[in-house]
Length: 411
Image (cartoon, rainbow, N blue to C red):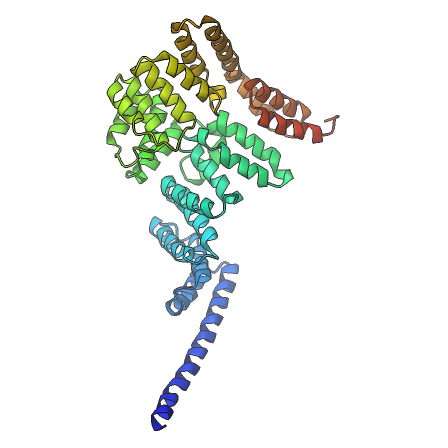
């Protein structure tokens, strides 16, 4: 009995002390949040630091600390951003904050640290938990845009569009058009935000190269970063730079479709057919998208000399976005069909290629961009409907038509 009393004499005061500490620290957390609302981020961080020393597993407080670090304009160094990401990673272990913390950590890596491939990993993790999350789908759409993978962004765009409020849909449709046909214009705001493009600088190809070089330098261990840089170089005719970029890349992404497609394109262009065929041999069974069918067509036409299989592969690629606007694939399929003696089909391909070439004319897209300044104009909406109908993109045509239907006839 005496022993029990002795224990109680110790335990009861201790419980009281802990209760007081908990009450004091709860007050400290509230004080920190008040300071943040007042813009006093340094003082808020001090309060939050003391609170977290007692309650390190409080995910909400971790979220608050990350916010206090990022919103303080005096704290702009990269190591401060990494500290904020560390707090968000702690918060992610709590199911309640898993999505919000993952989005914020990915956004910081993408926009402030210029590490889009690490960010992409986080966004994909969030989308596993919430496939329809608007913010994450929008970030994925733009991330793919700025890493030479705009052709893979369609599913993320349509998720955004379907879950957007009606008033935002015209802007989203315009952004979708620009991201696919005028990437320099579409990505200018992101390039400004990341400090890649100065405020008084107009969009031009070198800005894209600057961006991709930064991504590669920041994420040397990501083969996709090297592939994005090489894809731009190949597109701009800098073939030696493209080869060098892939020579520097590592082999850990040999099953990534974008990486493999870039390797195949660059190696075939340089006459290294063995390397192109070896890369195609690593293609994952789970992927049968545009890049697969285009790459298969290139390998079977250029490396194996199998025009029948190449023509079939090109036909499949032409049915998947962005095959609808790739006249070069129509020309390649036409050449394969001619060699097979299927002259009528070859002629149809050439005619289709001519129609696509006309829809890709610079003058046309310059005019469309000017019209898109006014999304309330019936002329603008009608022109966009016709453009997408001629391109064979019925879903976009229907959405622009819906906007035209909702617009007053006298506008």
